[in-house]
Length: 541
Image (tube, rainbow, N blue to C red; front, side):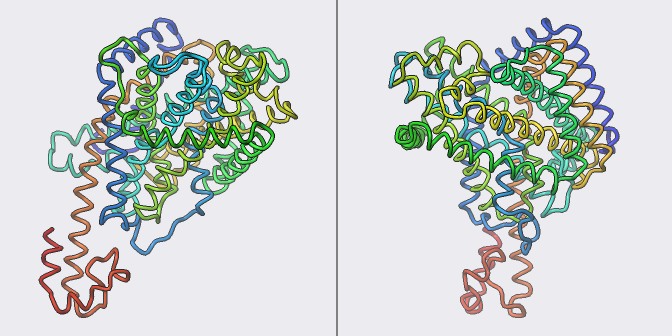
């Protein structure tokens, strides 16, 4: 594996994934209980580390956006974005957790309403409802996108500005170059990223199939069994293979734009036909509580009690997003070429979380209002009984319930298709030396493998075990993320110093300012002409 070749990464990844799937399919209960036990131990021992790390990523990203490096472009300094803002955000959600929002946007607030975080307030009260929205905002807000944003920013910088391959190993090549003993192991970082991605996508696709089957059962009465789950997966497979064949700009882009329109339309309909004023007040109060308690929630844990809420929700979420960050981050990097670091940070770290909070505020706010002010609406009981059908139970209380349910299932279906399509694309890229446009046959091979893994685990009942195993990969990858951040900061400083040095050498010949990123805005040409020592201080700062 010392040659960093895509073929060796492909073979090693496939062998490891195949071995895990065989074990998960052959011994689903034993594998699942062992993986879940290991995950519980890791979250208990390192929960504080996850909380500190993700909060640190948030602070780092905002600090970078407001620093002197904020105007650095992810590409040549004169490059422009490849996608419109609307398409860019739509594609971010397609590769991120869009499908999770459709299901948990209503169900998670209702779950926290039934079992409030940390037990500070009585269950199923107005205070519990307020807590439910606040913590749902937190779990789906800025922090969730921090790990995605860090990986995407670093890979985009090295891929489009430095001309390196879009791989984790390429980012850390400067570290391994100085330590020859580490070179043979560099490609294992890419294998690690491929394995985590495929396991995560396969389990998410499988869970999505089960949830789709639950929705079809609730709306049309179709049985929940292996036959219908196979049919759902088959239709999904055909759809994402067609999207893969169309390519990134046609397939994923068009489906993502369609899904964004459906999301906005469904959200506006629920807002208008539901308890509108109560929903708007819920959103306003929720954002206020979220901002007011931002730092406290970021680092909240229970060292003096046996409360396991943080381990079950926030810490599990943070581990899951770190495990997924090689995949989502690489995809975000692929569609973010040409944007400045400031544009990137504010776009990735603020817009998707804002949309998530609006979705949760509309659907969660409507459900909580119905439950608090209605008579035997049964949404809390339905959520406890089967979380996959909770959203459809809420639709039954609204006009045109069947139409709403069909639109929601379309959303879920398209989100799953775009997630699988983008995963096939990124895994093909990871196993093709980081190529921006990996060959079609590799994308198809990985698409087939992901579907086969998913079907095998659905039939054998090994999904939960593989999901826990995937989340376990977050712990070692967190340390890799720290190394990537250090390398990025060092490269940014060297990049800026080299540009300023070049500028100083040609100063007087080309009318540019002191800082190549801000030349036209700063207008320092005349000041430097009169005080040339200024640039020496800048170069050495």
